[in-house]
Image 1 (tube, helix red, strand yellow):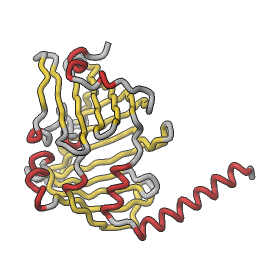
Image 2: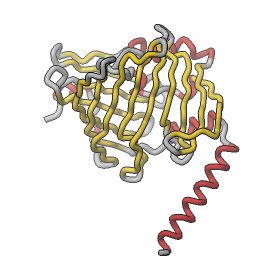
Image 3: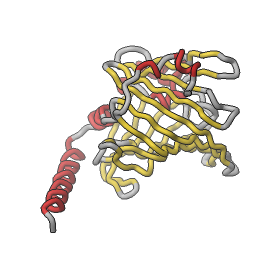
Image 4: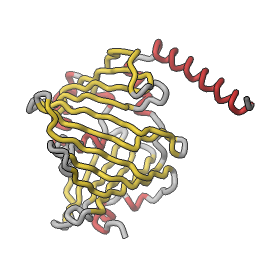
Length: 270
C-alpha cells in the first residue's frame, strides 16, 4: 500500500473520530452556525436547468445561468433565464446582507421593467416553481430556535443530524410574512455540514414541502449538490415538484461586481 493511501486512510479515520466528537458536543444552534458558515466560494458561475414537474409527471425545462459574488457584509446573486423563449431574458437579483434587510429584484423583459421583490412577496413561488424567493435567498439564523431531534440517522449512507427549526416568538410575524412556513425539519450531513434533506410545514393550504440535495461532490474544493429538489404535497399527496439541475459550476473565477446591478439585469447576457 502506498504512503499516499495510508495518509488518506489515516485522515479519514481521524475525520470519523472528529465527527463522533462533534455529534456529542455540538448543540443544534452550533450545527446551524456551521451550516451558515460553510465555504461556498468567494464567487461562482453555474449553468443549470430548472425543471418543473406537474402532478402527471410532465416536465418543462428552463435553461439558466447563475452568478454569485461574496464580499464583506453581503452576498450577491443573479440568475438569468436563457430558454425557452417565453422566459428568455428574465433575471432575478438578490443581495443577502449580514447586518441589514435583504434586497431582491425581478426583471421581466415583456414589461421592460425591474420590479423590487418586497419582503411580503418572498413567500411566493419563484417563476412557477416549488421554490419560493425566500428558499433561494436563505433565512436569518437569529430568527429561529433550533432543537436537535436525532444524531444517529443517515441519508444516502451518510450520518446526519436531524434538527427542528421554529421561529422565535419575537420573529414569528416576520418569518410568516417572508417565508409562509410554520416549522422545518432539517437533515445536516456530519462530514460537511450540508443540508441534504428537509421537511417544511406551510402555514396555509395543508401543504408540506420536501427538500433534497443529491449528487454531492467536491468541486474546486467546495462541496456542491448537483441536483436540488423541492416537492409540494397537499394532504399527503404530491401536487408538483421542481428540480435545480446544476450541470457545470466554477468557483472563485470572477470578481466583477457590475454583473450584480439592475442595469445589468436589463442588458442581459451577450
